[in-house]
Length: 290
Image 1: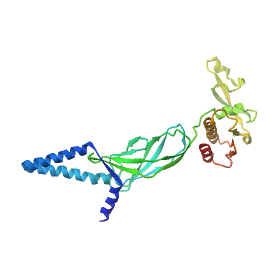
Image 2 (image 1 turned 180 degrees about the vertical axis):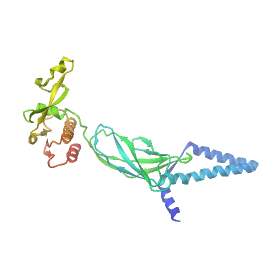
Image 3 (image 1 turned 135 degrees about the horizontal axis):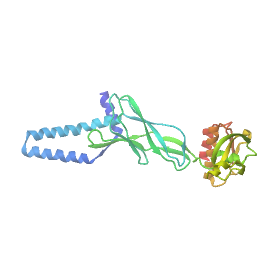
Image 4 (image 1 turned 90 degrees about the vertical axis):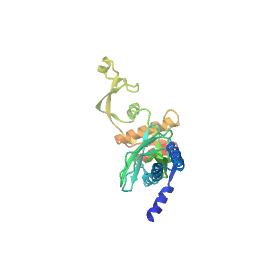
């Protein structure tokens, strides 16, 4: 009795859609029935019973194959505007039997076919995702689909959970080293030679590596700076461009400062962010929602 109640609950979470094979089965059953009625052949009755049994049993098998699966989102990494990333799904099969031929569909019509999900195990599945705007976003309306075992019905199960996340500004603009070179008197003195890089027009003429110029390559010498950390401040109002380009530039510098473990401050209109008081993720969130 408990098994029947559980099956009914599972069945209610599944939607069934007809396929072209559904029509084939209906036509085949009708034809066999007419043949049996008109000619009363035992072989036709046996074939009719066999086809009917397969078609009838395929429904419950397909429902149990799909209905027991449990899906949840796993948050991972940072998501930036204009940069393709992936949404991570965890699909768990609590039953002892395996699930077959499952396809995961997203709201933007992307899909992926899952490998066999063995009983009492789970699989991680990734779907591509591209955010075009910064700020908060919701990722939902996803569903599982299966035509197992005979493709006589397309079964779908909605994923009710919704992924809530933040899209940070696209990190782009001039590198932090270029900014420090332009503000050299404020951000420390050259300390050690640190290799060569391509000349982009912002470096001093005295830094040009003339040996590379002789070889036809315009390179400049790069020096590690002894940065005066307490002066490392980025001002929103002093940046050029529109609002989005300014936020993208600040986002790039925040990530580079995080990589180099440099404390910094950001001066926004009517607000100041300080890495000594707030985490990098909190600062990026401010930029995303600004």
